[in-house]
Image (cartoon, rainbow, N blue to C red; front, side):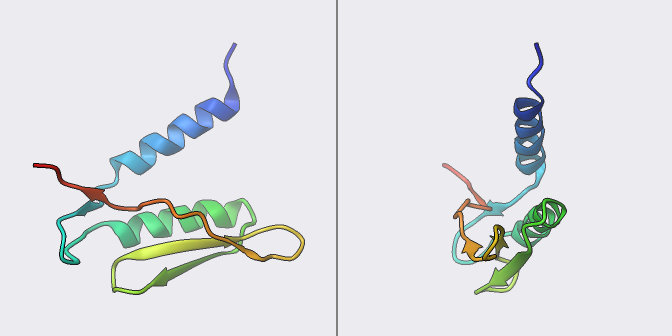
Length: 85
């Protein structure tokens, strides 16, 4: 029997993995802002009032606010990938 929640989670993970967010070190990263924007759209659709913050241009983090008090709930997913040698 199919589990719609598990299927949705798998689809979301596959989508996130397809984004190239390689971090080459020394602030040389790509794709993080794009994936942060994608996550913000998903959070907005879920009613979680997203905000994208960037300490360094192009290196976005997403905060979603949900619940009766709309307090920020920060989950620190890593939006970049590191190359291994």
